[in-house]
Each structure stands twice: as C-alpha cells, then as structure tokens.
Length: 325
View 1 (cartoon, helix red, strand yellow):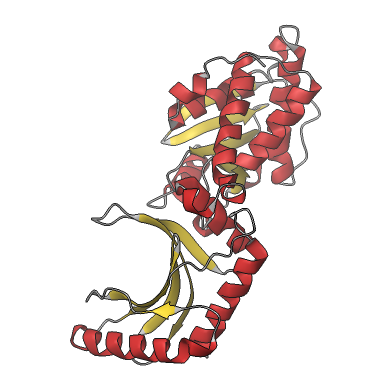
View 2: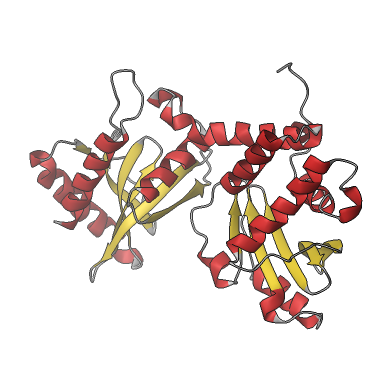
C-alpha cells in the first residue's frame, strides 16, 4: 500500500476518538445503506458487538439512532430505536477517576427515559490499563483496543475501503505494535509501551499485581508491584522497575525506618546465596517506601538477546519463594 498521512496521527485526543465512534455509529442509520453498503454494515456490526458483549438480544432492525456527545459529561450516548441506550466512556491513555463512571450512569438513569435493563454501558480504552475493577464495579463492560482492531480488520476483509476507517485501523495497529514490541526488541531497547505490554503478559501468566507509571524527580519509570505480605513491623512486596527487580518495604513508623531497612537488606542478601539470582544492596533512601535489596536484571534473554518469557517467569517464581521463605 502506498504511504500516506494518517488523520489520527494528528488527531490523537479523546475528542478525535469520540468523533470516529459517533461517525461510525451514524453509518448504521438506514438512510446511509445506499451511500456505502459496506460502511453501513460495519456501523451495524459495531453496535451489534456492544450488544454481544452485554449478552443482550440485538434489535431485529435498527430504525432510529440518536447520537449525543457529552451527555452530562458522558463522552457518547447512542440511543437505539428510542428504547435502548449505549453509554460510551472513551479513554486513550488516562484512567477513570472520581467515580465518574457511576455518576454518568446515574445521570442517564435520571433522564427517566430508560430502565436499567435498557442501558449498555461501555468503557472503551486504546491504551493498556492494569486494573479495571472500578470500571466493572460501575457496571460498564470493556471494549478494548483488541476488540476494536478485530472489528476493524473483519470489516476491511468484508470490503470496507473508506479512508477514515482504514486510517483508524492503521493508527490502532501501530499502537498495538508498540505494546507488543517487547517480544521482538532486544532487552536493552525497550521503551514505555514495551514495558507495559510485558507487564500485561506477566499478569496474564499469573503474576497477581498492578502496573503503571511511577513519576519521580529523576524522570520516572514503569513499574509492576506484587506479592505483598505483612508482619508486625512492616509491609514487604516485590516491584519491577523496568530492568531492575526491587525488594521493597513500607514502614509507617518513622522512628523504625532505618532499623528495619538495614535488617531486611542484610537478611535478604545473606539468605540469597543458595539461589540462582544475585541479590545486591541498593543505594538506600529513608522514606515510608524503601528499596532494601535489588536483583540487577531479572529478565532471561534468548540467543538473539530478546525476552525469554517462560525463563523469566521461572526467575520471578524463584524470587517469590525466596521472599516468602
């Protein structure tokens, strides 16, 4: 395919994404069937997939669609046949906050036009997110980047040739490639999305933790934290700080921080000699959260210098058992 500029590389905000979703849903209106049948069918298919995610029966026919942007703060409200409503809260890389999802849901209910059973709330996110519990708690179903890519790909295969549709597909595919880049890049070349993609795979393989960007005066880093436990003195947990694995403690009592930091650091380093990984003393801080020991690079590489996920999982499992021992 010839190279051409992509509309969405210039319109990267949530407003541009809102515009695409509204445009796509509008194509499902019966009046556009003759204009572009493939795009009309794609618009219907998009709405059908939202019904499928909610396990609701799709209407026998779509006769009427009303689309409202920014309905009391909700990004998009799509009313179907005047008797059901799709609520879409759309995020690029930010997260939901301040109970906004519950508030939007309640605002649509106050509209008194729909029963609760008539609502299909969707949380659409193109970036990765570690924890969706607040979304699920607010009764929203997830529509992820992969859901959208699958929908776009299948409709391109069926014949959609519209350039806006294709631009959005290529735009999302580039984002997907960045998150998947940890699979093909040498370990030394990983950037932000590669770390998030890697942490997401670790979660899929059984690491029960959360990940995200940790800002600090030195520029910040992407971290994954898990395996939390507690005794009478402090809380202990593991944290990946990109290529470094840290043994961390959280000490509430200000007067005992130095004592407990030194105790945990000495104990972990002394106990580590029978293990395959090398535990070292870090440069100490003296705050509520402290790194007491580190493993230089816990990642296992293959013969081409790329990540060996099963081998890395073995190391992380060994580190968990070591801390818990």
